[in-house]
Amino acid sequence: MRIKHLISILCAACLFAGCGVPLENEPAVIVVPEREPAKYSTAVVKRTDLRLSKSVSCTFQQSEETTVIIPNAGKLVTKICVANQEKVQKGQLLIMLGEEGLEDRIEELTYNIERNKILLKYTDEKEKVKREDLEDKIYIDNLSLEKMQQELKDCRIYAEADGIVTWIKNGLLGSTSAENERVMTIVDTDSCIFTVSKNKYTDYLSPDKNVPMKINIGTAAGHYELIPYNTEEWGNKLYYELSPDYADTEIKVGTTGYITVVMDEKKDVLKLPAKAIHEATDKAFVYVLDENQVRTVKWVTVGLYGDDGVEIVSGLNEGEMVLLK
Image (cartoon, rainbow, N blue to C red; front, side, top):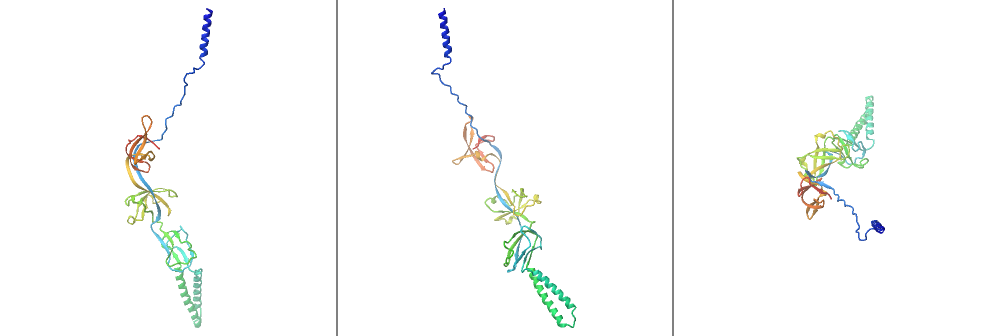
């Protein structure tokens, strides 16, 4: 009985000891972390309007200007009485020509004439020789005065209209004039227009249609509307005037604006961002996710490539999700 009890205890001990020893042929368990699904940026097919446009620069200029010339050759420019960008009025003195001191000589000669007239008045009638001498001096001085006054008139250039001086010839002061030489430009501040130089995009501008215009910098920065102006003279340059709605706006001469030229436009079409469209052998396609979240190709037909997207003619429906590049 004791022997059986001892055998039972030994068997139980062996069993407990064996629980802590791994079996040589038992397979190892490898834990593999679950792979995260790929992340994509997406875009939704939307129905909207689409247009293709370009920005064309325009310059604010006066439609009327006065060219200041010096009619006579050989005149020394002794003084310029105005500065560039200065406002002037009609009749204002702009340029002085001729010798220095001409006005002083006129003043002196005028004084001599008046003095001799007084002397003549108080010279006795019996002093014929003295009177004749005074009369001759007055006559000769009057001739000289008339000549000097005409010279002074020819040596003074005056403004023919109100406006702003926008250009003065470099090196004008101290130079000698050439005949009918252009030396200054004055523009009429009351007649300002925007001019556009003709280019490949201006063919899309219509003489019957107003256009939006934007000024980016300066005190006049903002959005405006321009009206076609003097369209019968459109050629290498196109002309626009500011809409009456902005009549009180002060815009400086030479300011640059940008006209939006609409080259093509589509209404109520399906649209995607351009970076969602791929091309292969002249065909367009997009990437979409299938029901297993696997990226797959879907062929599409595209239309207008606009400013902010591409027209989808077929291959997708409104609301579908596509992958971006």
